[in-house]
Image 1 (cartoon, rainbow, N blue to C red):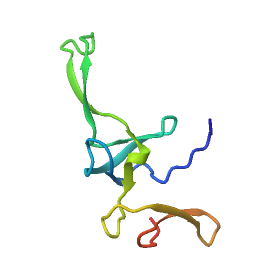
Image 2 (cartoon, one colour; image 1 turned 180 degrees about the vertical axis):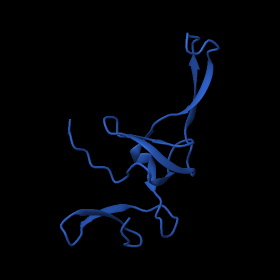
Image 3 (cartoon, rainbow, N blue to C red; image 1 turned 120 degrees about the horizontal axis):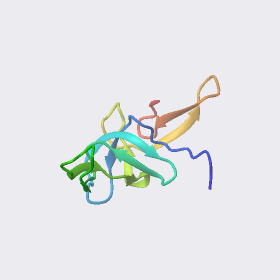
Image 4 (tube, one colour; image 1 turned 90 degrees about the horizontal axis):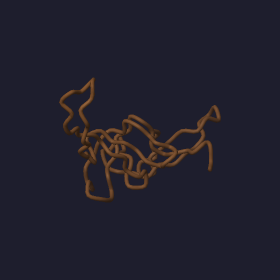
Length: 108
């Protein structure tokens, strides 16, 4: 298994879901699960988890939380146009990699 996976989506990016039951919805990436190639997007793919009563939570009950989505099912939203775009990498003047929108060519 590769140690240093490079994803084209980072935490804090706005993405659009392009496949599955949540298709067409947009949200902000809160967490990236590199081991599973999945992302957690705020407010998307909500599931209900049942919680048993405990000393900290004597009521128990049901909690709504976000479930992970495979990273291939989301696409980055271009900040310039607001449309989904593919992402490329290129080196800047100092030799550092930068992400850029393949649709507009602008650095993200």
